[in-house]
Length: 80
Image (tube, rainbow, N blue to C red; front, side, top):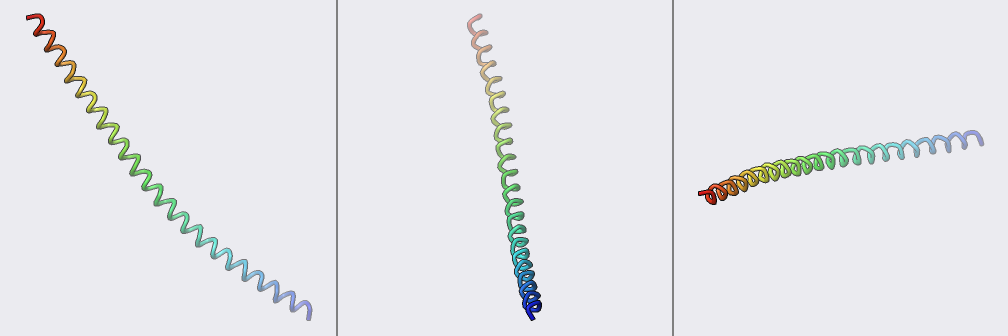
């Protein structure tokens, strides 16, 4: 009868291990979903920063062009 007790104990242990594996698999799925969501959010934020950089760069270029034209206008006025 001691072997029966060992078998029952072994089966209980297997069932507990299966429950733990199922729980860990569910936790892993939830973490993977959360990680994917965070990755999408980070990508959106990076895209916004890239857009802001591009806008700022084009704004600086147009400001420089405007400043250069003002300088050349002043020089022309001085020459007259």
